[in-house]
Structure formats: C-alpha cells, structure tokens
Amino acid sequence: MNLELGLNILLVLLLLPTVVYVALLQRRLASLRADREAVESVIERMNEATRRAEASLKGIRQAAEQAKVTLDEPVTRAQALRDELSFLVQRADAAGERLAGGLSSAGAGGATAAAPAAERPRRAKPANERRTAGGGTGNGSAEPAAAPETDEVRSQAERDLINALRNVR
Image (tube, rainbow, N blue to C red; front, side):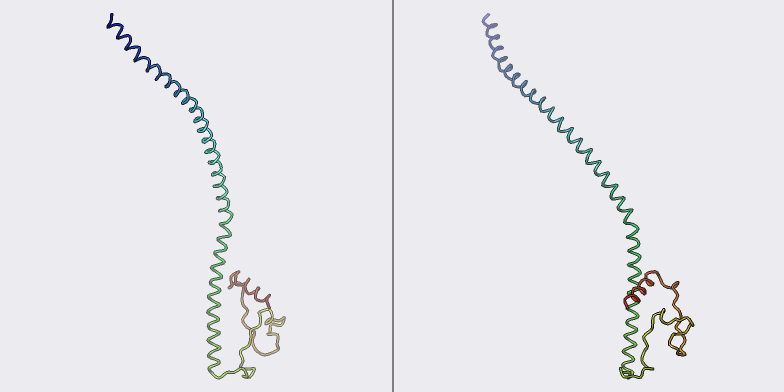
C-alpha cells in the first residue's frame, strides 16, 4: 500500500500544476476570443474603407477621362495655331531680313533721306485703300493697281493677323 499511496500523492502533486496551467490557458483563450471580435470589426471597417476608396477612384478616373475628352480638341487647335504662328514668325523674320537687306543696300548705293520723292520707296497702302469703285489706285495716277491678294491663298491665322494689324492703325 505504501507504494500505491506514494504514487497517488505524486499524481496529485503533478495534477495540481496542470490544473493551474489549464486555468491560465482558459483565461488567455477567453481574451483571444474577445480580441477576435475586435479584430473582425477592424477588418470589416477596413473592407468598408476599401470599397469607398475604390468608388472614389472610379469617380476620379471618370472625371479624368471627361477632362481629357474636353481638353483634347482645344489642345489640338492650340497646337495647330502654334504651328501656324511659328510659320508666320519665320516668314516675318525672313521678310524683315529682306527689308533690312534692301534698306542697307539702298543706303550703300547713295540713297539718302533727302532723295527725291520719286526715288523713295513707297509705303504700301492697305488693300481696302488701294481699291476704289473705279478699280484704280484711288490717287489718280497712271500706276497699275497692285495685284489683289486673295483670301484663298492665306490661312485663317494670316487673315486674322492682317485684320488685327489693320485695326491697330
């Protein structure tokens, strides 16, 4: 019997820490279950925030596409106008260089500011002043009228530029 009693006492001594350990484990599991509910609520809030963000991104994409469609036409027109203006500036530079070359060669040839009126270069009158009802130059001279400039040859930008320059005078 002694052996049986000793084994029972040993078994009780070993079961006592096991019971304490099980009680601690039970408390930890209970706190994990409570935390699980909190984690689930956080996950649900994250999912809702993700859905709202996706909806916002969809709206932003649609707004960007509408802005692109709205701005494509004006940008294309602006680029075309830029190209036309660049061309006109190049032509104006070339004409200015030709004019400056003509003036410098006239100055080198002995022409002065006191040159007779017949030898001075004449300032071209605008097309609306050159033409009169009779088809002449409007000054009664025998000079032929300058060839009429057709609007068909000029681009819209050139016509607009010419009209703007006329309005400035």
